[in-house]
Each structure stands twice: as structure tokens, then as C-alpha cells.
Amino acid sequence: MSLRRLTGLGPALPALALLFVFFLFPVVRMLGFSIEGGTLEWYSKALGQGLYLQVFWNTFEIALIVTVICLLLGYPLGFLLATTTPGWATLGFIFVLLPLWTSVLVRTYAWMVLLGRNGVFNRMLLESGVIADPLPLLNNFTGVLIGMVHVLLPYMVLPVYGAVRRVDPALVAAAEGLGASNARIFRRVYLPLTLPGIFAGAVIVFVLSLGFFITPALLGGGRVMMLAVLIEQQVHETLNWAFAAALSAVLLAVTLLVYTVAQRYSRTAAET
Amino acid sequence: MEARSADLKVDGLQKRFGDVAALDGVSLDIASGELLTILGPSGSGKTTLLKVVAGFEKPDAGVVRIDGTDITALPPARRDIGMVFQNYALFPHLTVQANVAFPLEMRNIAKAEVARRVGEALELVELGGYDRRLPKQLSGGQQQRVALARAIVFNPRLLLLDEPFGALDRKLRETMQLEVRRLQRRLGLTTIFITHDQEEALVLSDRIAVMNKGRIQQVATTTEIYERPANDFVADFVGESNIFRGTVTEPGVLSLEGGRRLLVNGTARTVGARMGVLIRPERFGRGSNVFAGEVKEAVYLGSSIKLRIACDDGLELIVRQPARGPLPAPGTRVSMSIDPGDIHVFA
Image 1 (cartoon, each protein chain N blue to C red):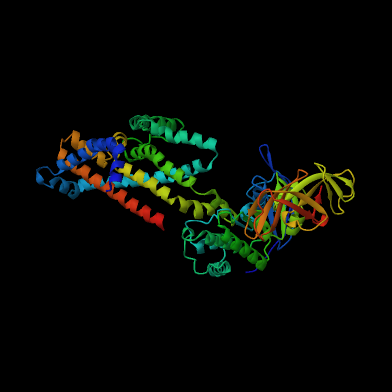
Image 2 (tube, rainbow over the protein chains, first blue to last red):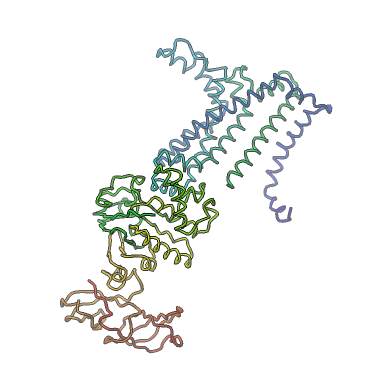
């Protein structure tokens, strides 16, 4: 590294120091825990036993489903916000961003009030006679999905919005002038040009989903086991810190892997 | 490639943006196979006119007709008009081949036919062999050619060019101008060309429509526009000019502000009428009007020299002469003559 690049680091030193003390150091300590006593026992337990593999699989499955739902809901919304009039866009943004400014915990409790057996939704549906018995919306897979999609949706909407805004309006006009219908303009111009945005949003949502804790813990009612929930149990209930550390290390590795592959993919996509 | 060119007629077009009238009663006739340039400064309404013809803007009033059919309400996709945008607007994610094929695919033309016609169009703009490249792998001039190929490949009824050469350097621009002219003639394609560059307009056009403040100031052939502009604006905007105003004191004689009597040709007959005169800088030579004065400034331009002369009677003249001999120094006494026949009189 040249001297100039080194001195350029100067102003960044406080932040780097902070990251080192509060992020890098704990991560290294955690990795240390996981192989305490020089044994890989905890890793073989995490990756070798069907029970725990099932948790990994669950986590992936939920993350994937959440990502797909966020994509299906978030793309049209981001697209709409990017193409509507400034007034509507502002209003839309307030609704999209408001949840981001509220604590995840508060939002999750709010969902518990809404989704419970005697919650707002079920009472409304029962009283209007649409259903005879309350729908199971809480303490299960459905509840976790609803909560996670709600929390993560803005992370999909924002990249999509950015990508749609970056599409040159002249390209749309050109396509129209060359005879393209609205559907074809979307498929041949908007969609391919916003793929990087879709991809970025999907990766963020997926990666955040992998490590999600509060929402699955509260809305799953202990019946939906995701990796972060399992780790918390190991720390607080079984007090098996070494195993918790090994699980965390695996989660970290998987997350980094997903992220790296995504980066490489989006770079090659950008080059072609 | 076969042209199915159409004639275009716009009538009484009005378009307001807030308080600004971008189009204030624009009517134009363009014959089939003609290249008409719309020339005007920025804000003159020329781009709005193009957008209305292409269908991207709805006029507040007036009609657009192609071959007599009213298309004012037709969306752009159904107008069959080829357009080359200012920055080409090539699809960055599609190859040259796919860009040019785009309008054909939108018309659901069979694959083999698409390939054949794309090949033909690319040959026509001399880009054969570039079909697998992406736009960003091409130079500005090549991108321009792709845009042109894409605009003509579907045999449009009309070709619109919106300041297409603005981003090219001078030499390339001249090449492309001649190329567009050649292509347009060969295909017999009715073409509207938009520019603010009067030189470009003179090189390319059959006729020029000069626009200012949402109105058409004059529509005429290139020589007509240059030699016999209809008003001050056209005279001033197209080419260099000496413009004066005066009053007709007797038939063929104009008295300028400042007192000078100018012998002009027969068009100034009505005694007492206020008229404008235009003298092109390169027209000075022999003649019965003589201006004496001294050189204020002399500029060497290669093939010619340009002189700014302060006349003894207070007029200021711009004169262009062939570059021969040394450049006259400021302060040199000179006398310039002009024939009445070389003075253009307008209302």
C-alpha cells in the first residue's frame, strides 16, 4: 500500500477502531469459543445431526419464501413509486419508510395484536361472517412470514425504486416510438435494465432473513425454529456457548458466501 | 429496402406549457420524400413540434395528418414513425443486432425476415459485422449509425431526427450529415430534421422552416432563406448579416437611421414605408453604394478574412473577403461598395 493511500486512512481511523473493538474482536472471540479445547465437536454436531440441519434448512426456506414474497410485492410498489407523480411518490415513500423508522420490536408486537386468535383480523373476519373459526395466524409459519415480509419490504422497494429511476426516459420513448406496447416496454426495457436493482434487493432481503431473530421468535411462538432463535436458546437456556458459537460461525460463513457469490454474479452481469 | 414515404401536414398546432406558448399556431406541409429542417434557437418550440408529430405530446389544438389521415390522437407506437434521438437512446442491454431488430419484433415479423432486414439496414449504414457488439463498445459515430438503422429498418412513413449530431466532433458531424442526406435521398424518405445549427440546416435540407417563439418565421428553400429572409429574425439567425432599418424616401431609395441614403432594388416602392435591409458580409465588391470608414478589427479565418468597419456616417459593417495579402491593421482607411441588387429588402 502506497504512503498516500495509507495517510488517506487517517480520517477513517476512529471508525476503523470502533469496528475493530466492537465487531472484529467479538467475532474472533466467538470463533475461539466454537473450537474451545481444540475440538471440532460442535461443528460436527451443528452440521452432522438431522435436527440441526433441519433448522438450517428451515432458515433457508423461510428466507427464500420471504425474499420471493418481498420481490412480488416490492417490485410493483418500487416501480409505481418511481413512475408516479412526485406528490404520490412522496406519500408512498412515507408509507414505505415509516416502518423503517419504527423499532422492529414495536412492529412485531403490533402484529401480535393484529394476528392473534382474538386479534383484530380474526375478530373482523368472524364478525363479518367470512369465517366460522379463527384463522391460525400467530405462533406459526404464516405469522413469521407476514411479520418478516413487513419488516423487510422496504429493503426491496428502495433498490427497485432506484433502478427504475435510473432507466433513461428516452429509452422508454424510443421503445414506444418503435412500436412497443406498454407490456412490451416493460418486458424488453424496464425489466432487463432493472435486474441489477431486483438482484440487489433480493440479496439484501435474503441475507437479512437468514439472521432474523425478533420476528420469528415472537410471531413463531417457539414453533418456528430459525437459526438465530436456536442460537439464542443455546446461549440463554442450555448455556452451551460453544455450540452457539459454532452455529453462529456457520451462519456467518453462509451469509458471507451468499454475499460473495451475489457480488460476483452482479459484477459479471454488469460487464456483459 | 423499399420506402413507403408519406407526406405530412400539420395545421394550426397550439401547445402551451403554463404561460409559455411552445407552439403558437404552427402549420407546415412536407412533401413525400422531402427533407425539411426545422431550425431555431433553444426554446423556439422546435422540439415540441417534433414531439407532437411523433406523438409524445398532445397538442392543445390543431391536427397532424400523414397522407391525409388524421393521426393526432394516435399513440406513438402506432404512428410508424422512425426517430433518432439526441443521445441516440440505444438500448444498452441489447446488441446492435437486437437494437435494430427491436421495431421489427414489435411488428411480429418472422425471424428470418427480421435477420434479413437487420442485415440490410446495417449494410446501409456501413456497420456490417458489428451486429454482436453492445452500444457501449461503439464510437459515437457508430452509435449514431445504429440509431439511424433502427429508425429506418421498419420502413417508416416518416423519419424524425432530433439534433442527432450534437455530440459528434466537427469532422464526424460533416461526414454523418452527408451520409444522412445520401441515405434519405436513396430511400426517398420523408424526413424532418431538427437543429439549432444553421450551417447544418443549409447543408442538409431541401427546405428550411425557421422557428422562433413557437411560430414559424419562414419556410423556404435553403438559398431563399439565406438570400431573401422574411424578417430580421431569420436574417440574423441564418448566417452573418448586416441589418439596418430605414424609410423609403423615393422608389428604390432607402434613408437609414443616421441619415445615409441607400440605393436598393425595385422592391422598395411605397414611399414612407419602414423597411429592413440585409447585406451579407461576403457580398461587398463593386457597386453604387460606397461606404468609407476605418477598420476596427480584422480576423483571419483561413479561407477568408472578416473585417469590422466603422463607417464615417456611424454605421458598423461586417465584411468578409477572400484572404489575400496581409491582414489590414486596425485604423486602416478602407472603402466598401455594394450593388443595389445584392441588398435584400424586407418588411
